Amino acid sequence: MPIATPEVYAQMLDKAKQNRFAYPAINVSSSQTLNAAIRGFAEAGSDGIVQVSTGGAEYLSGPTVKNMVSGAVALAAYAHEVAKNYPVNIALHTDHCPKDKLEGFVRPLLQISAERVARGENPLFQSHMWDGSAVPLTENLEIAKELLAKTAAAKIVLEIEVGVVGGEEDGVANEINEKLYTTVEDGLATVEALGTGENGRYLTALTFGNVHGVYKPGAVKLRPEILAEIQEQVGAKLGKERPFDLVFHGGSGSTLEEIRAAVDHGVIKMNVDTDTQYAFTRPVAGHMFANYDGVLKVDGEVGNKKAYDPRAWGKAGEEGMAKRVGEACENLRSTGTSLNA
Image (cartoon, rainbow, N blue to C red; front, side, top):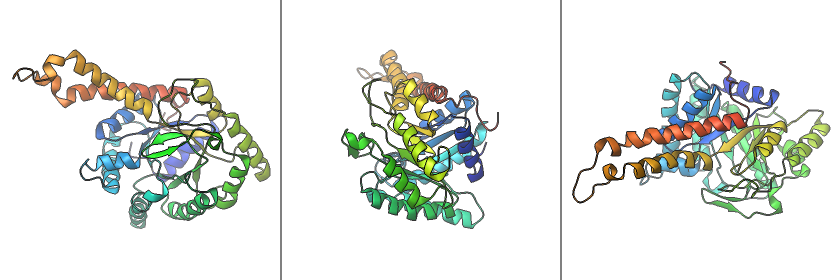
């Protein structure tokens, strides 16, 4: 299928919320990890979201070039071509973008999509994230309101973060403390600033103890009941059930029970990065150890081309990552839910 149109993306999100499942949003940083992600979705019979962070986009442009916009545009162009060969719908998203990178990342990409839409084409990306967690909530929502007008005009969904995700990702680090828990008041302020869809669709990452990074199950103290409380109290004021379309960040180390509870409370998108990075790299490491003599030139020998050909270990990495994407689909109940099923 082609990359999801704005209309198809809206159908995907609506179906997930209505049927209480969520899409894994897989971070990628190369054509190989992109192929692995799409393969994983296809094998699971799930539509899905592929996303790129500022660091991933910078890397995609070439480690010596470091142009986030070029990298993101290149990834999107590649994805638009290869996605045609798979039977599921794939949406493209840009991940965490803090204030100091808006001008060099999200705003230029928005402009590209606005120009495409003006020509009668679809936007390049289906959604963009503004990460205002490092600034005061008032400023966060002011910027979000301004961006929402632009994303709506370009037929793009905006993602925001209300609260703080602990740990570190792409140079953005936050302490692990009580700030990791969004309040009902924060939710009400969000609706007051952005509306409930009439000003443009947006996804909201409400935080409930989320932490980026690598943690064993139980190490992170998640409180998904916070999501229920915010949905219920804000919804009661609006006369609307589960008013927020929620995003789950920092999910590594979460138990299946915590993941499913979050989905029941309105999470329709869950970011998956750390786990799929490991799932890609571990088989590659296994290949290197198993083919040590063939991969490394020892004492002037030339090794075994079949062992060190990047396609050999690349296939192993892609297969491992695709399987982990399938596991994420199962955990989030999206297996077999494709709009094309």
